[in-house]
Length: 299
Image (cartoon, rainbow, N blue to C red):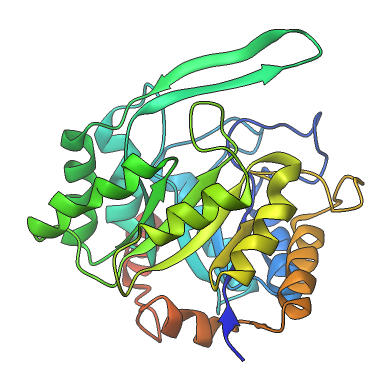
């Protein structure tokens, strides 16, 4: 059967425990959530670092502590770091990637309006411009390439997919390319199956891809992606709720629901070794960046 890779986005940076008690803050909590996600079927974890009080951190130290805790609990997992941020200097958006060398570095592929609307309040809850010009994209790519970290190209709309073409021509990205198709953010592509099908049809040959859908539309989009031969990302960064409408107690609950959709579709949930083969990642992974940073920090 065709293996489907499930990624778990553990926390994000915006949501708090007041909104969802299951969101991890400390390294130990990230490790426990990663274990739950792994046991439910996830082979990749997407990490935004936080301080123990829950505030977002862009420091290498928090990424290192969280990753060490995760890999001590589940050494098989594929680790993916975020590089997305608003108002954070470019070097701080990527220095954890170059220092620690995860297997994936998320790479936002274009600029966009980024907002959230409340129909109850008849108002925008937040409204900003998420700026990712080519100069920033190429800066991040050059940093990732310098340490052999594979980019995960995050596309919020069709134009973002096209932005990869000049980067391939410049030799900054080499196929097979991993895409994340993000639907449901106001300002980007809407979360419906026809849009997802169109976006998937635009991808270069030999590409692999996953769907990331925001809020409760996640389950429709996971089902659509799995039926189209894609992979899926779930987790408390993107959505708190199970298909039943009940709030998830942990990331493992969300991954378990995704795994059931994969199996019902006639596909199998990828193991970590199968996921590395699908995603063209080295097996075993290179953990030298994290190991060297930990040694230097202990001196």
